[in-house]
Length: 228
Image (cartoon, rainbow, N blue to C red):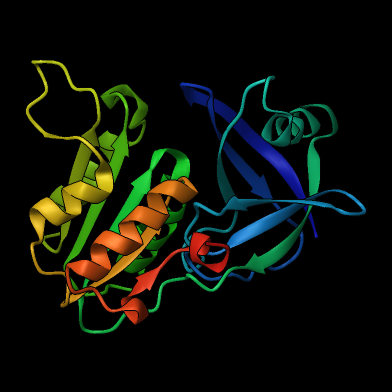
């Protein structure tokens, strides 16, 4: 499938928010990812940030610098050619709600995974309580914090928890590691359904800590767990 570039925007800290369109029907689940085909044996995964039931486009959030050709080459191809070849849809860690409280955990640009699920839950009018934990080194890296604050304000069942690792004295919110912020908020995780995206080391330690706090393996979702 070919996706055509509509907009590309640097939202700060080397993160690009990209909107792509297609002449074909876009079929995927909230929380899945696409593979960008850069060569015969070169496919690169990126989480889809858009909501499949609401949006008629594909949104990506890509962290990229010239020193990181794996992601930067995709940005450059979009800028020069105006399109990319992709395969939809990949991953089994998509939204699969039950009656439990939903917890969405994102480190950095793992937010794209969480965004798709959060906004799809709103579109589906899920009544579950939904807690969004998004962590970064600095608050300015939480580039859609205002949008999530507004989302929580508009929906009584949605709660946004920004987490900053290295906060200064003016920060009054949660500090430290984002996966730990979940444990600080919920001492018992047995009644939760958790979706997580971020660096593999974060996902690995989260699985260990959440299991110890009572979260069943069947209630933990993340693409990283297919590889670690």
